[in-house]
Length: 556
Ligand code: KIV
Ligand code: ZN
Image (tube, rainbow, N blue to C red):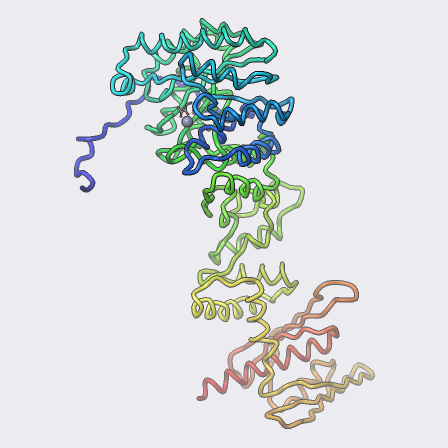
């Protein structure tokens, strides 16, 4: 068994739709569709272990909290758990007034009756009936001709209308799906749907939902859009119909298909959170909603705490969400590569908090969906100075001068190569401490005394070297110049900078000095202390010790 040399002997291309005056390609999505979650039905039926009542209720409450107003809660005629769940929702008053539950039924009288039984006492409900309409299903699965398929749909529509009339206390909405719509001849799909509409007699005030499923995704998303636009032009009573999309993701383009379907005139979308559902899943409603959000349109769904929504979904479905999943994956707001980190860091520092979002590589502000900025930048062996600098700044208030960023990133790189692992902010900080703040050999600064008079500084320092105490004295125009004058070796200071860490009583000073000893390589030192002069002296000793250690290593 292997891939065919000529796949055309086994598979054929999906034919293009004859719609030369298609209008959808020049449209954009400007209106928010009606969202319908099918997590508790299509999503649930695809799980290795379908949800129990407690999980379904938890999921339902999360959907309500997010703001989904139409929720397909199950297939009550096919499952006792689903039947009981619908009863619990109704009897225990879990359905808010602005939320409508939806249930699915096959187009059979006994199953439709059982479905209506499950809905007794509901204030509002959508009854969703379907039958297969595609030629392969007519031939292979049901051995039905077109007339037989229309008869099944019409008969079911009549039964539904009749039973709804018997339960007038509920406000009913009817929904019909020509299953495998995408593989159904378009004129036939319209014929079946028109026949159903003839029975249900919808009006603009009491619309029927015609749900057009890509039960199996079989073509590029533009084909689906053509099918939706064609259907919208040919269906009768268009003003009394809500066209609903229901895409699956077999070719990995379920989101694109739904988006193009909306451009083609659809009013509603059915899908599941994070794309759970049969096989490759249903379209991901979160993805669709946040795609709209990042175009400046509020989707009417709230994912301000997306991680909590994911937690509920993962626990109820017992399926993990992939770390690269759009918007929600653990790694999707994270940059490892040095050039990306650099750009993101610059983007954050230049971003106007009230302006249009322009941070490179981040299509959404992670904070809008409850993600923290700390998670944005992570450091591994591919990372450069940008990420390291960002983490030290964000987590420890340490702002390395530019050339030191480059120097320290090489130190970090060596460590990540050695460990073969990502480094956390704490590990990077430890490395900075080890490499710079603890650079105390050959000379450890033990204390200093400073006298200043008429713009001249005199410095006395106590130093321990190889266990011996030494005393150095120097005089200069400022404390640092005085210290340099007192050193037993000649150094050139190439760069000096300082800044405060924190504020108020707990503020500290950080000082950075780059120096050269005897014309060798310039190296940085860092000093941190409550006192600025002490910090700068420590920085000088740190740089001196590193430079001397390096010179010694080179000589050896
Ligand atoms: O994918 C599908 O066709 C369905 C129908 C029942 C709407 O889930
Ligand atoms: Zn489906």
